[in-house]
View 1 (tube, rainbow, N blue to C red):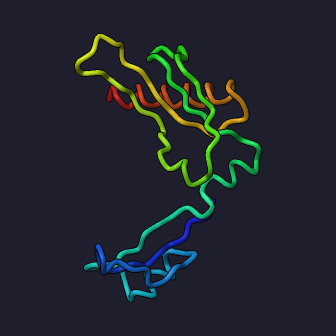
View 2: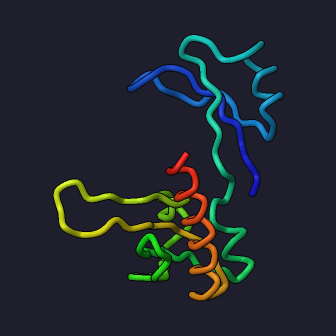
View 3: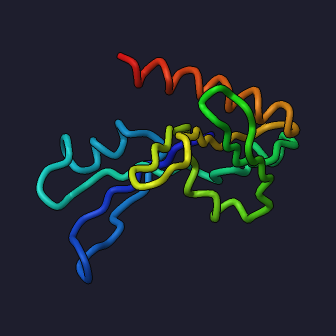
Length: 132
């Protein structure tokens, strides 16, 4: 996936795009150094989701208990731009509920089995990080 670097300035009604570059170095050179004040360099993925779809992958949402048992799996069939709420994996712990904790992750995968494998790998990392 390619990244573009957008030089912006201002805020609210004064917000505007000044220039777009294919490298951060070019964006920094354009503004004459690192961003300061209201001039920013924003990073955006170019054609976000297009590479994955062209490879025949599907976007899955996987929910499982902390032991890795799948409680829900859902293939999302949306436009590329609507897949902005991608979750790399997190543990949910209900504060005011008797429901047990769960793990939720999103994954680009070949099929459900592949999505579950990816989610399980993310679950293991999340649990390890939580116990540090």
